[in-house]
Image 1 (tube, helix red, strand yellow):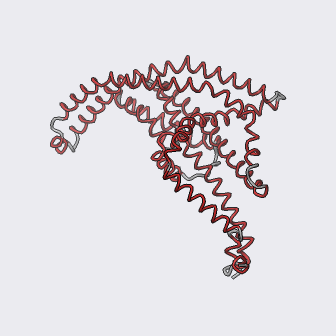
Image 2: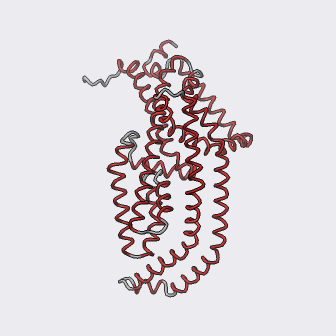
Length: 384
């Protein structure tokens, strides 16, 4: 037994602790198997976490946005509790102003755009139809779609018929959104205690683990905190800058629904790479239908905004803190969206950053164990 434990491989994996680790893995696997057989028992718990998931995400986002302000007020010798109360009062005032002044205007623009969207789409379809009929592909096109004009008229009639139902669906959506906003009234109370005792949470969590591993876990918590803080604060500032620049640009070129389209661009820019593609779609349809020159002006505005955001704003605000390759981001977004929908797309990048921190620290831990136990017996050393 002692000879078995003295081999480099066994010592690398923990010696006697290897049996304990294997037992824990077996125990976890057994629990997962049992859970798969009686998962219906845990449906209320799953439903509970699904219900509070959005609130928790929103609370964490606001926490990281307000934490620097609380720290700044503490620098002016204002007690933390009073700093939290002052900050929450100012934020509540801004949110109230937003709800009563800006959101109703956006709602009116959104309803108006929904009403006119069928007309925009039909005009776009007719424009494409006429362009193809006068192009070199006209013969092939006419053979395939001899009666496209009549078909488009039928589609237009059907769209007009269903506009009322669409408006009812939009109204229902707005009502649901209003209920969510009302439910979030409880957010300040949760946020207050998170801002007050959030710094103590890592130390409280560390008490669960053995003292020997607490320093390593504290570094992991600090790394996660840094990644979340950098991403959330940077992304919100970048999104606001994009929305402001798009609004000014749309006003300059005279594009309809400037504020609504800029708000869509600001919100969707939270999703890297895919967000701008989603944001440009409604603006592109409106510009094409308005005039070819409007399409050129929209392309200029979009190009200028993307250049400013990519070359100046994002590098200065977010820098290279996440160190995630663009291709990796795209795959992460697509996978998270397929598995968890819109919520998955929102939390995909920060979630990946957290997992990356944990994996990096685990890799460093294994490297130290390898250097301690396996390196002296390595037959392929660098000197050979």
